[in-house]
Image 1 (cartoon, rainbow, N blue to C red):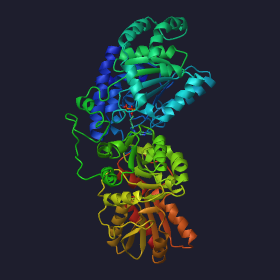
Image 2: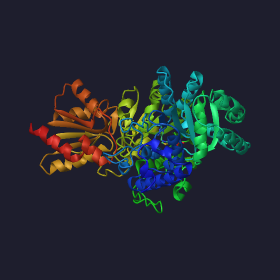
Image 3: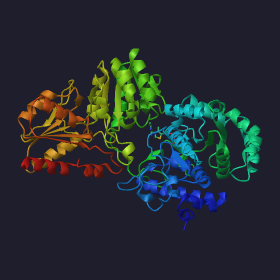
Image 4: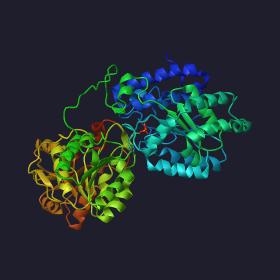
Length: 622
Ligand SMILES: Cc1ncc(C[n+]2csc(CCOP(=O)(O)OP(=O)(O)O)c2C)c(N)n1
């Protein structure tokens, strides 16, 4: 029996000394390693916050006190301490617990996340409610130095500092975003961490803090007496102090006792507090510590060596994108590449090296990335902004107001479009066709394989208007049966195979599924035409009209929500052109899709070839 197994709820931690908490830390690390090595998931970030999580839960009283994790990818220890040990091995699996905090999953997950830089605003919202209700519970937000580069964090700091609402903000500074953190905020934190007087200040103040008997009433005089020593801290965190916060730091986030003392001090402060704690991503595991970027989010691996269990053989869409852009930028010196803290995720590592003066990683700042690109385009450059579909959602107004309204030739490389699998609802990229399509002047494309992505990029660079190209996670060789190939023509779709009874009009990675359906139907003497839509906008209405008039059924297939996607587009075109051929729109229904293996999710949604064929046959039989 491990000590960890005695913890059924966070309050159970209070019976243990800080020395014993280190044994629990060891148990937690083992559990995280053994589980993530099988399920895949976020490793390095979680290993880095084990002691910090223990310090928080042993000091505060969740769920009365609210603990908010920014991004939420680092909440595994939190899950293990809040009643989820028994189901922890189901994490990120279909039907299992989520890899992120989810309000409906557990009472200790007081605010869900997956996208970065939301915790401080949410914390302030909760603090406002608490004060209106005249309660005195604590609200604690934990935000990484990477997430602190997001604009929303500074909007919230501005607001919290102004309202002077009591919120405890823990900056978990590990000098890393997914890759090493960048930017002047990171430089500032680095300065604080390495301030020359830091060790002395810490020692003096910790000695003073140790004299505090208990948290509670009657301590305000003690605090007053401590003010002088705290001033030293404040001098270090002058920017935060000027914003209206008490700054405590920097503290070693792996030192449970030091963190507990800092948290107790924060608890009795009247002002909002920032605790700056320093941790190491991957702490306690050699390979993760050595390459925290590689082990940030990782597929199943050998727990002893850290080696991936399945080596990737084929190129991903992201790799094809990155390589194609390097080549295009060789010829066209106007091309720049912009990413928001996802250089490697979107495949731009080589571009960053080869065309370093035209590569811009702006940190977790999707809105800024888009308007930065708008500025570049207005000045004559050809920016390509590569961001995951789900994170582009952040920049909707920038895409609309700063780019499209001015008809600027910015290329949006929309990576991880469609279902992404184990990261779940916060990360599925199933809305971009809809939010891009409603924007006037936007050209929208989706390749069915890597070769087509290369062509689409080349085509996009030649356009004088905003262009969005969406492509999925994973292999770029999902479909190899293209017929008439190139060149691309604006707004023209491609016929993959022809049949008499049914037209399956698919877009992007669903072309592969449509083709599978056609083959399966063929076995039952039902012949199908498969269309690779290529463009959603402009849409190939002429081809639709032609095919609709000679077939019994039209089916659209997309891994975007049907609302606003290709299904809705076809429905409108059919109505506009007075065509009454029966039509079935297939895609993501009007709900948030959970996490798990993509094959299982597709089955659940009726988007696997077997279920699609059954629907087609049922409709044709009517
Ligand atoms: C809006 C948004 N953009 C990008 C991401 C992808 N992402 C997930 S974690 C992460 C790095 C976060 O760094 P930090 O907050 O310092 O946490 P750490 O992993 O270092 O603990 C990024 C960029 C995201 N989750 N949300």
